[in-house]
Image (spheres, rainbow, N blue to C red):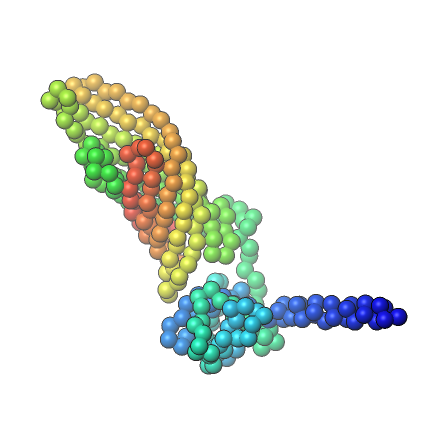
Length: 281
């Protein structure tokens, strides 16, 4: 009999704990993106009305370290609310990346979820971007043999988007050309053409107004052709190899973007910085 009673009590405790675990589903979560003075910038999955109260909790199981009341919220995706801290435990710092929760019963803004990025067709807007810029070789020998600044063009295609992340397939063309002394005292005109095909993961991070900071990394295949002209005789050779890139840039919701890349193709002359200006369409 005692065993049955213990089993029954354990079953009731399990049901009660499950009910408590489901309670967060009744709350609207947000992500702290930034803090300026007493204002918090909170990223949301739906808009909220002015006056909505959020509790900031580094962990849901812990007491809130602050309460913040919404003073404004964007009406278009992505939804970002500005909330003024009304109460805080000043012994703790409100960390960037912490979660904030509001009671769903206090959110009365009509909302239709945005279409999911996954599975969208290639005809969706803002999936392509084109850039024009310059490549600056890091190695002095490369700049002597060719030039300090190479012309560069790049076409990007974003084939996967999920919240702040996107996967981008890029191809392009860059070329350097210059004259260097030959062994017999003449001049050799050399040119190098590079066609990269790279896959990058890009993350949208800090946002200021209509502009956000984008960081990314990736790698791919680099096809290269070198030409030499001496005494009106041209020789050429082609090869391909693998390399990687890191990228940081600014992107506007209106479509323009400014991007700086560091490119490294090991054991080749293609090591340096690439700066490009372009637009999405």
